[in-house]
Length: 118
Length: 118
Length: 150
Length: 150
Ligand SMILES: Nc1ncnc2c1ncn2[C@@H]1O[C@H](COP(=O)(O)OP(=O)(O)O)[C@@H](O)[C@H]1O
Ligand SMILES: Nc1ncnc2c1ncn2[C@@H]1O[C@H](COP(=O)(O)OP(=O)(O)O)[C@@H](O)[C@H]1O
Image 1 (cartoon, rainbow over the protein chains, first blue to last red):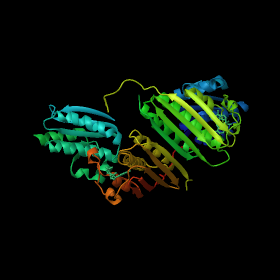
Image 2: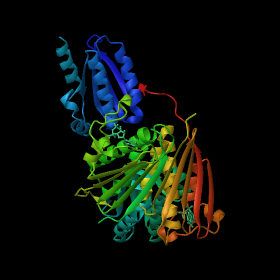
Image 3: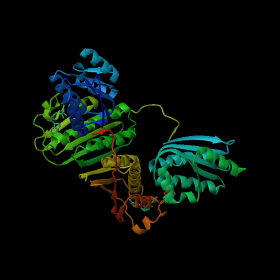
Image 4: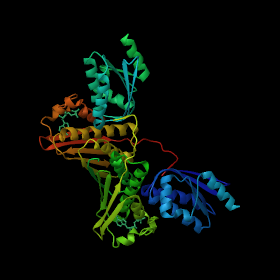
């Protein structure tokens, strides 16, 4: 699993693009990397781009929900972008869409977050 | 395994492009298909294009050597084209290059055969 | 009707083998010509059950995971078994969102996903004896062929 | 030093499983980060030994092929075994171009390829008892990483 991390909007939004297979074996490292980056932000704000995820199981749901809980607990915001069909099916089954905003593209997600922050 | 078959040079040369994995499981069907097509030719003449072969083991060598023997027994000609690096290694180990002409591209192989036939 | 075929795998209960297990099963059932969607479903299900064996079954011990796969006609049967710690209450474990390991950020969706991606799922488990998940799925052969498919 | 990992597979001796076996082994050893060339070598070797078990070992009977793979450090060990008809003369069988099945267009290059693609190869066989091919190969980890490889 590769994690490509950028900051945008004067460092106030973290954009993390995941590439590869997000399973239990990869989950802990992805979680630790994201948490370490989010720790530096006063109000954590994350866009998770999943368009490069070639496989995901419920461990991936755990990573997403885990970040969501931590971020909202600190009054931050999080959304997800680039959801492929297989990931979307897991989102449907788990009801994740009821609690989190899901966007087609990373850019759309960033734009929406910027507007919310104004 | 897919076999894409064309005839060229007024039907005197058969060009067969193999695509996929050429192992023992596929060998018999490929052999039968080629033999059936070669049967119709008075002087069998075959260019085997291996550029689409994604995996090959010694069963593939068997298919190639088998056709070569049958074709030369009927005074025909056969050459091989599009040899990838892994296939080339098998060719080296088996010494196949000492008995058969190997060309970079299908076109080069067809051109050489045409010249030989003149 | 496709003929019968069978395989079984035994492997160390370490997370490196989660991807190995799903690729192996995918390669085995590829002879049924599954759609991409079916293949993803089966890989996901293997991943869920194998991960459970590793992180729940063998949380506090070393051991092996046992996986069996059988093809009969267009039906595939999948059994994933561990000799680990087992469960007290299977019905509770099957509930969506139920997890005993929130500390590992488990989502509690494993069994729910297995159930919705397969046609049948039964679970056998006993404390300190281990767990066996038995699943079945009908794979529909896609129609239409290409060129000389030999 | 990578830690130890082990798997074993048992499967029906039918030719559909030749590709399954090589994909499974390739997936298992991918944790060693093999180069494309090493991966091709290992897949070829698995294909040769498994095919031999199916067409020579179980030529006149049904049965199962047994495959074991072990990773120790950067060394992989591979054992492919059948309980089929076995061989009288192992030294003769190892000769390049030697084959007892020219009727099947076998090239007689199987053992030669296994030997040249692996670092070690030993064969145990006895008539009507079966055959066991034991191989070892050191997989060199390629250097240089990319971005956040987690
Ligand atoms: N192989 C197993 N061995 C022991 N307990 C298990 C096993 N599989 C599942 N469980 C139990 O069932 C619960 C629910 O499993 P599951 O739905 O897959 O969710 P999760 O793995 O996210 O917790 C687990 O939290 C665990 O307590
Ligand atoms: N698993 C096996 N069981 C019985 N005989 C075998 C087995 N593997 C190889 N042999 C014998 O050894 C010979 C040489 O094997 P190999 O070098 O792989 O060439 P090929 O498979 O092309 O014949 C075979 O023709 C066969 O007689």
